[in-house]
Image 1 (spheres, helix red, strand yellow):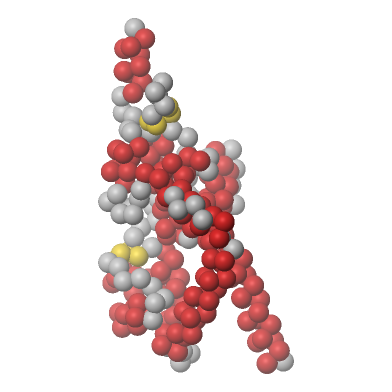
Image 2 (tube, rainbow, N blue to C red):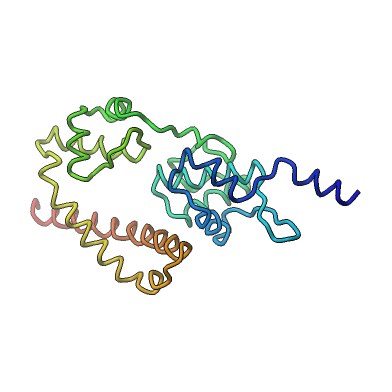
Length: 230
């Protein structure tokens, strides 16, 4: 009876390898180490067999998909994603103003990937501007894009209408590379561990630090504007 019960319990559950295979179509770079990292961070808690093997149910898989989608399309650090998920589990409003209507188990999940033509239309831009943005390094060369790309291309379209083209802002990429070098120096201890988990932690910490750099950079620009135009 106990053996039958265990068999019944395992039905529909997936191993970590099966979860990886199931999601690779949406997230080609997904590694099993990433799934283990999400568990280490407390974002996903798969069941364990007596032998210690991870077993994911449908809700676990959808939760992983939600986390990865929010990371990819919204560039959110795991800490913020965790707060979002915790709020949903408590039945509270999400702390993310842009995520109104998102619920765990949805298809972020109704957030869709857009084709190049759909992206151009949503951003009020042109295909030439998209190509210029890719050439300048502001957007990746891809067949589909998330919501973050709409925001970037929309901003570039507004700047273009003001006479500022992507080629005029190549210095921003150089500045971003210098900022990364600054962030990278602060991650020496984490990067010293050449494991997949260590790299994932470094990537996550770099995202968090980049958010703080964004705040400071914007404040500096506003200060210069106020000083020069006052």
